[in-house]
Length: 413
Ligand code: NIG
Ligand code: FE
Image (tube, rainbow, N blue to C red; front, top):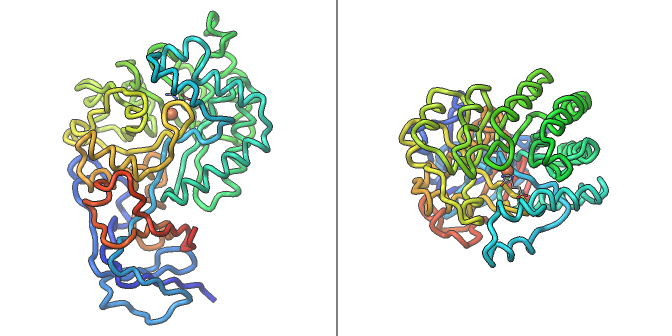
């Protein structure tokens, strides 16, 4: 017997896409299809059918939810997070308030290296418990698919430990979890004077072992001034490709680093951050399949300039938004806030920002065919709003929790 859940009298069922649309670019991002006063039928955790409420085929279901005056949206797809970490870094936050920059903190051994020190001393079980709690927290905030990176290990053992935690998250999670190997997140102190040796450790030891255990879907590099150069990044991506790991790059967060062009050259699934993006970078991305993923909460929290989302969309790019949830530069995985930042600080229109958080976030994890929209047969990963909301009011109420309920595979979380 199948299990059915019926949502009735939905004021605005928003984010509908045909099965064939797995990403939206440029002009296409401006529109979002909705049905007012709609029903939606869930069968065995998947979207079975939807349409005007007057045409609802059923009166009964195993569960009926009255969604009068509420919106129903696809759950967010957060394609860039670092939720496996051992502890917060609020001390460094205060150091920044007192005038130190993110890069200065990193140079004196804080930042990513601080997180690595704590993570190396923390057991796999404890890391898993903490990360699972964060995963459940972001699901409650509307996330219905997520990517999680390693990169706070920085030794072979600790990177493998992080990736095993991510594998356990995959097994325990009701939402899809993609694993990204980010051994090239920072140079450990002992390699700062011998960078080539750390690149060799990554290419000769870490990648073969990560791939050997099937622990990662992607390989990532923090390609930026003061971190990994274009040449070092290229060596890692080339080895990753030999082992079947597709690239995603932290690019152009701090400088015009060449990371975007390199990502396009290597057919990266996405290039992420992108604060330093000009006409050359936009030209490189045009016509490529690489998703331009913007992380506006990092710009907000570190006081950096925002990525030029308007120019990117106006030039036809496929733009995604993600949270970058991590203890250093974005200590929150609340994607509703990202929606507001996209609109308030980057002048994205509500439809563009919502598309960037849903179908394009899914595309940045190669999940565009299975997640990120209201489409028959996709899992019923849905956000139900409180009453009185509409498309424009979602980003407008930037600090309110307007989410009434989150359904994952049709089940209330
Ligand atoms: O995506 N930019 C590099 N890595 C992370 C920050 C990591 C940290 O500060 O712990 C990011 O922002
Ligand atoms: Fe990141």
